[in-house]
Amino acid sequence: MTTETAATAGAAPALGDGGGEPVISVSGLTKRYGEVEAVRGIDFAVARGETFGFLGPNGAGKTTTIKILCTLANATSGTATVAGFDAAADRDAVRRNIGLVFQDTTLDTYLTAAQNLRFHAELYGVAKAAVEPRMRQVLDMVGLWDRKDSLVSTYSGGMQRRLEIARGLLHAPHVLFLDEPTVGLDPQTRSSIWAYINDLKRREDITIFLTTHYMDEAEHCDRIAIIDHGKIVAIDTPEALKASIGKDRVQIHTADDEAAIRALADAFGIEAAMHEGAVTFAVASGEQFVPRLFAELAIPIRSVSVSRPSLDDVFMSYTGSTIRDAEGGAGNEFMRNMHRLRTGRR
Image (cartoon, rainbow, N blue to C red; front, side, top):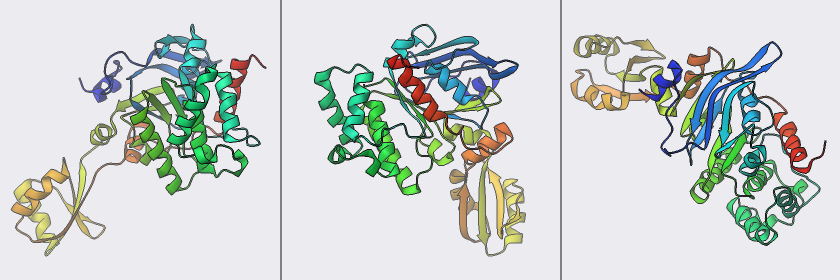
């Protein structure tokens, strides 16, 4: 059974390439708020070392699911384990094994980067002898060691996000949760943040669980789960999800477009039509079909383009709506709650 079939049939989806015991495992998870069922019996597993994307519109249930995984909410029913620990029964152990980076900054901007990291190390019980070398390691990783003694208020938005990633890694978590990690950043800075994220995966033994509404960022994921109205409607790799919704679109310009349309029907059994000034048709594996097209189509081809279904198309196909921004303000509240849980403050 393919992962697509497993996801849509309600069976437990296969793990990614990491294989073995999953780092995150969710089974039959539900969450009710009064009469509202925010999460409706979801199942998924994330393999060690995987980058797993969670996509869904506001109110879909993704933030509720993350809160359950990070011990900030109790499930109504079902089970969730993170790094081998039950999210309901072993909360302290789960918290020690996760890092959190959310879209709204939770840095203390009146402190330096180093002071922010030392405070975080104290909260997470990092051994004093390990703090300075680990701080050097994570700040080097995100290119901020030379600015460690600068006030965070002097940092750009991209630098602050990099510092938050470094902070999330300081206590060497097994799982790093990233909620909209590049929201509000310009395209160049977004690209650099992803370069750092991909680099940290090469350096650290870590699993990444992220939410994003940027479809190009979802391409970085090994697998994606799409959640809508509290249910997971699809899980697979980005390529498999795109392949599941239709064929590639091929557009050609020829010496005689009308003759080309007739020839495509006669020689290949392909129904083509003029669209956007080009002969347009759909085929499976368009890139593999193009060489045959040049070899067998009797009409000279002047240009050709092949486009595959995008993740935007996937989201629309499975949910019937366009993706919207993730829940505003969830990150600040989430991290503040985490600090309160660690310190015992209310």
